Amino acid sequence: MRAFSAVAYRVSIGLSLLCMGSSLSWAADGGTTEYNRALSYSAPKGVSPVMRAADKTIEPQTVGGGTQYLFKQDGQHASPPLHTDPPLAPAQTQRAMAERTAKDFIHHMGMKTQPYSNYPKEEFGVFGENGRELLERVNIPLHAGDPESKSGPPLPQAEALLPEMHWNRWLRDRGVAFMFDTTNEFAGAITSPTKGLGLKQGASNAGQYSFENDIDWYKLAGIRGFETHVIGVGRYGISASKMFGDNTNPSQEIYGGGGNVVFHLVHFYGEETLWGGRLNIAMGRMSSNTDFANSPLYCNFMNNAFCGNPKAVTDNYVRSSYPGTSWAARIRARPTNSTYIQVGVYFPERGIYGVQENRTGFKFNGAMISGVLTPIEFGWEPEFGKAHLSGHYKVGFAPDTSDHYLGVYNPPNRRNAGQTMMRIPNCPTCNGVGDAVPGTGIRRNFNWGMWFLADQMIIRHPTKDTVEGGLIAFFDAYWNKPDVAMRGKLYAFGLVDTGFWRARPLDTVGVSFSYTGSSHSTRAAQRFQVEHGMAPAAGSPYYSSGGAPLMWGSYGVQRWGSTLEATYRIHVMRGVTFAPDFQYYFNPGMQRVLKDAAMLGFKSHVQFF
Picture 1 (tube, rainbow, N blue to C red):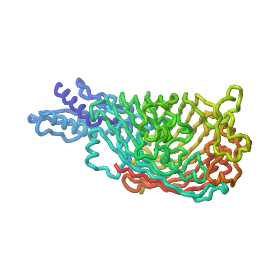
Picture 2: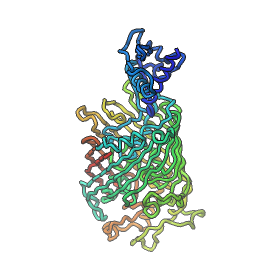
Picture 3: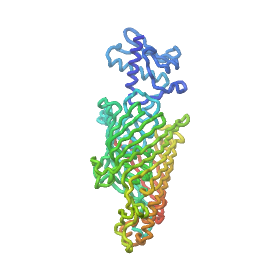
Picture 4: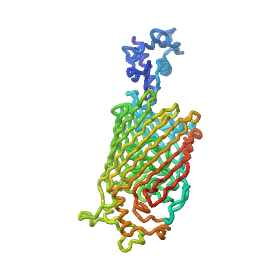
């Protein structure tokens, strides 16, 4: 019995080494809940009750000074014995034997292994700039796993053009991962713009190269569950939709915020994973919209309506969006395998997107911190049916205490009459009224946003793409506090399908529609400008110079606008995707004075390593 206990202990050690950092989901003989538990060996009893219930055992036998292991089912041999040669003596041989035994044990028990918390170790064909894989830790449910594992999730490892470089593999084996990629987005208008406003029909390219470093400090230095992440970008180009007057949903999401420098620091934070993934704590320079009100589905598309977040989320500087970050801390807990709750404390900085204050991303002193943002989000991530059709349902609320001086109209009264008013520069036709809009410079110290996001897989396809291998429908709704926001609400829905074509299993097709509505305070302020002669006549030199006379860079009162987008992402080769893209704008920039516009373009992504 003592010998068998020692063997069982060695087998458990081998199994732990095999699956460190990975969660194991077990299914045997029909996959009942009794079997959906991690293996647990006990020295007195030899094997766990789960294994005994399956009438399957592993037994040691001593043969000629060595040891062999016999797998039995219902008392009969289920496999040839495994021999050790030389006999058990050195610790290295014992460990190798235990690993072989554990592998064969799993195979003959009819079990399946599953990556830690269902995070894919390598993603095939999925589009995503560096950093996008980190947010998938929010969006994938925690499955039954090894609660004793103290390691964090596997380091991000996207499908890459150059996967077998010796130096990179050597570093990864020791817990240090480097990734480098580039994204380009080209778009051009195929319709003429509204005449007389200085607008034009044109095309442009916007792009980004990105560098990412992730370190698993358990592998590197024995610090269990701790990982660090550093991401930097270089950006170039501009969005083409600005040429025909849109200032709400840019046609290329990748532009802006990069500081026009070679390297702009984005993320710089550490995270600790505890209790097999039940608790995750992150602190450092972080983007609030990476974890909150987000989904990996959004950047299948190119329009900024919801790639990388629903655009209403980023209506002001407080809710930082990639590549803007601030000092922050975030805690995520999973009370059950398919639910989570997360809350964060972020310290937004005024000028976060401006080159004057935060051009390189290395401004750490916090001199421009203006308040506190405390988002909270609840998530339910069920799986339906035999095909395990996954869904993600999120509701969240994000209050903040920062100062807001935004161009929205609040009628002057005894309390605010003497406060600063928003001024309209270079107003050639104000007719003596002045270039200030009463009530628009009032300071607000409280703001909020709230959201409901949902996506559900309808059909699953047998592809390598473990995250998006199927037809997925999604719906988004976001609301802002109207007296400090330009966008009052946003609604979006769409379909994304990967693996629908058997001959091209990693290609993706998608269609989406978004609706953005202005806040009533925005409309009131712009109407005031129009009614008091602050809007130059069409065809005036002011328009010819490319100027927009109303607040928020508008040519008319902003009410509502919509975008329709269709894309087909082609998996060209390992690490390379190319996606032709069509976009149609209804009321560009939420302005009915502008005619609808159509655009053609493409989005490409190359993951080098």
